[in-house]
Length: 301
Image (tube, rainbow, N blue to C red):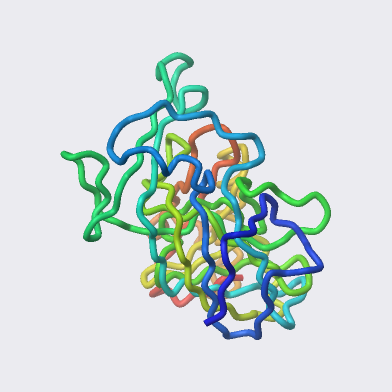
């Protein structure tokens, strides 16, 4: 099977003349990914709290890629089916003291802990076991010009941190450069909505995906389809603006595909839709997803 190894990483969703791999539409690829600190914390003994070092600026969330898809051009979308996520024990989690959704000084010191995975469970401590629910934190396409850092979300995808970006989900990402140039990284063994410490259970992984092209999609934001829902994923430093972008994207879909007028469409969103948060720990752009039931028959647009 096609494979991109983790021995070379990038910290930007950048356009490059030398992609790590080029495939034809419809092929499978395994992305080998690092945890958010590229293994630097994994030598600690599992289950014992330690003082969490500050992240090195610009060196978080190492990305594997890019993957080029033959024929992908700007105004297309990459269609990425997440087939399998294999977590490689151990992972780590933690809480910062310098930043977070709490008053200054509320957290007296930053604490991390390494967590082993055993029999489908995350061993947070001897007394706290959590189910493994793997998801992909970073999945994005390259952007020309001022390339976003690995930890930044946007119209390219990027650091979305949505737990629904998991096995069985199909992600739709706008293409901005020939080949699409897909990057993957920042897998979490589990993460709650909000990721309120800025850290989930960060873990190395192997992510198997099938990648296709949707020609002329004209997508303005990333979308995803799960077994139950179709959703648009937006981001911004300001909650109100991210929410407005998500609602506008969904309004357009309901108007064009179901023939609803705007007032009727927002009514349907209000009674059947769910606005969820991916990450909102306060130090960067938050991410939102507006989900609608897949039974409505709508598709990303």
